[in-house]
Length: 334
Image 1 (spheres, one colour):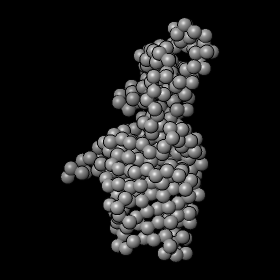
Image 2 (spheres, rainbow, N blue to C red):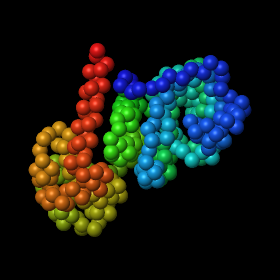
Image 3 (cartoon, one colour):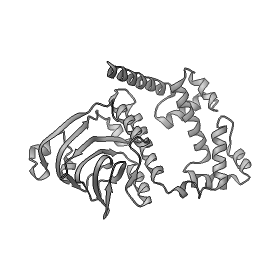
């Protein structure tokens, strides 16, 4: 894990105690002053710190973004107690064991266990009498509060996935994006964080909510759209196909998927277009036709609305990332 990510290893020669912080520590730009002022902690052990590059003011105000990322190797007596910190935290355990106290409940975090919490709420996490290796990812962005509120509808901040699962892959991809300087890095990082948050929502959703309770005609219609998204699928056509009123269909489709039928269709087409831009040399105009959008201007506008960049910009960025990963891989071989 994290083989191609550059970290700085930090070893605490002595235990770090919040009560020993000085005025100089609070004024040090390396540290988040708000975090220090609202935290109590004892930290022993070591940490692998990832350097987050400068983020534009626009991204801070409008996009999902990473505030900090570290992998802590906490000593057995380490803890952090905090509240009233404007940040959201995703923790993920690689080995050892920790205990999280959040919203009045205690949770044991073992290998593969993670948690998604709002740092404005009181929380305490600590090593459970042994070394605890855990990722600590601080995020922010205008929609994070809404994501977290929806996530907590499941009743617990905790999720579980094996350490070689999708969460780990998405996390590594996010760090790789921040490792490469390019014009649209903030946009791509925001999209990746969006994917992580959606993955956590789906990972913790009750199975029957996503499958059993979804009417068969909705599931069948989704499958039909996935297989025929290149065709002209109007709302009138889909309603006729499903044998129901188009307004009722639109309402029910959004109820169970979160999308209107048209938005879902557009997402299918844009996702396929992204694959073709990354994996082929077809011109954007040809790709537009391939995915069922026959007006290049409309295609460009829809693509930019979904991804934050034009098709050509997306292809250029994807190629830069691919080249960088290839070079990193060959560098590690010599």
